[in-house]
Length: 552
Image (cartoon, rainbow, N blue to C red):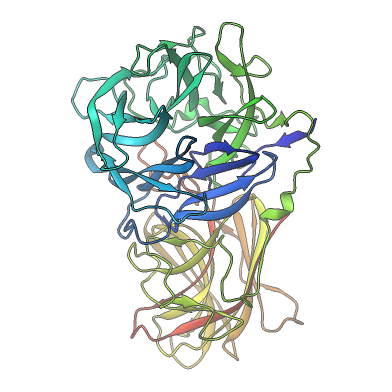
């Protein structure tokens, strides 16, 4: 029996939904304001996971103008064995102002996990985090009904209804089944399973922060009533101490941060039954900076081994409810977990580039990013400032380690001071670090400079300026535990030169951006990016001939 190290999917991979079809395992995760939307990963051993596709690739959603942390939330994968179709349910969170949380939920189907997927079928706008359950030709949806009435239990009820997956909508009415199975409150992300004659409802609760958890209840009928787990506590969490927080609609619960724990925020999970007759839960987790309640990598995907008790309740294999960094693999399998598959080497020599590249807000379109105009290069046509939530020209990959180097090689010929191109770190439109080639203020030469955004404030470093004689350079960022050192060289044979002092970028984390006191400001994570800006005539472009990420 092998040992699996968590996280199984490092970097931004929150709200994992896991299924098995035959000997193949699939996980779908949230993507929020990033395109293409909904990451889908594949594994045959539960330890090694590869990104194989995205589900929303045909402009099914418009994410321009999306505020952090809205966008595409909590995709749910399911497989209908009767029709042999894959199903994906998801929410498009469009507005969170005034705690209204306006979200439309949809379902899509496909004959293959890699698609093509059907056009989205509208389900409801009652809340968010929909999940589908298929039984005997019928289909059911479970979802959080978002509560807006003063004085009522927030954030609302978990509700279940039969749904029409042909025409869309629900059949009959929503059945309110629970506001949570413990005293932690903030129930969300419901998922239905059936085992040994019972329907089991797995939910997330405790808020999206350090008290996050997974809870369970069961019923003899799909619409309930559901009996809570008799322990009265979560079945998986990073914070197992008893907590009473009913009525708190959501909170970071920073008082539950444990500086000695490698894993924080364990919660929002889904259950899978292996071909070896074993049970696992995939769930989200976070890894903070040492000694600080800041999580730059966002919410990652972890795995816990489970079993059923004699009384028919699901619990962790060791009988506790504290999520672990290592778990036992499937019986009879000897697995080597390959951490090197998180490194990225891209020379843009092929017509298609790595599927790891994602774009904030706007879709990837060959009109602004391609490998055809200058073969062997990724050409990025400049567009909006990176403060924009509409058309920033950014190609980014998830940061997957707290210690890594990202590097690129680019050529760029600016002819106006508002044209730039370079390498950087990115969380959202309000928060990023950018080392760029652009014109000097005197407009007589190309220089290398640094621009930073912190909580929507523009921070310009005019003291650190280097002349780039041939309009081409290699750029590198070494990221270590929240600090970034930028370096450059003019030729591959040159020695790397530091560009000023290191930058404190600890704020590029879920807790460091945009949040109200006591709440988490973001749900995504740190990205590395190459990109270009043109606020002149939209005619400039940059050619990138290499992009690498090395995790140390």
